[in-house]
Image (cartoon, rainbow, N blue to C red):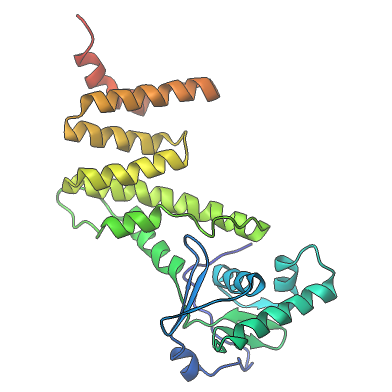
Amino acid sequence: MPTHYLLEQRPSGGEVAVGSYGSAAASGCRVDLIDGFRLRFHDRAVELPLGAQRLISYLALEGSWVTRAYAAEMLWPDSRRRQAAANLRTALWRVRGQGCEDVVWTAPGRLALADTVAVDIQHVAKQARVLIDAPVGQDVELPAVNAETVSRLSTRLLPGWYDDWVVWEQERWDQLRLHALEAAAEVLLCRGQHLLALEASLVAARSELFRESAHRVVIRVYLAEGNWGAAMRHYQDYQRVLRRELNLAPTTAMDELMHPLIASHTPQ
């Protein structure tokens, strides 16, 4: 299922959406999907039943217009077609019943999340890509990274949701955020912010146990701090788990990183 976190959604083909552009622009609506579903309307928390939450979440992640039939099938795959369509109508009614008429745009046979609704994952994903694409070094302008950035990248998408369309998106988000956490740790390491760099790299390493690139960043932070014992212990723990679980050894890149430390502590 294609996903476009940053794609703008606008009515096309001469169809009229429910809610004009002007009223949608003043909607003041925000949807959060990271660390669970939350909907706010003009700073008011809106409580919705699960079916309505799933509809808004699906449209936010889909990022474009979808047919009603396809949305109903994706959201209620175990229901008959007529029942799934009825469930979709009920979910839409629940959303509008909370005074959020401009959250979902509808057109004949289609619907989409209004493009003026702020979605947290769009913003955080954009930050993540900036971090991943940014060159890192002493002579370049480094992107902004702070504790809030690390915290948002450390959090899963819609935890506890197991629908097929969610699981695929969770995996996609996890890969993006883990790459971004490693990149954030590199930036922080370059700035000498070792504690926050360590937090970012440890989250990445613990989120995916065999992710050697994250473990290498952890070790580099320890070495930069002069914590040789912590670096050696982390390396040995990773080496042991890799051998026990996969019968593999660390890569040449890891060996090269550890070689000066191991050589300096090897009896002559």
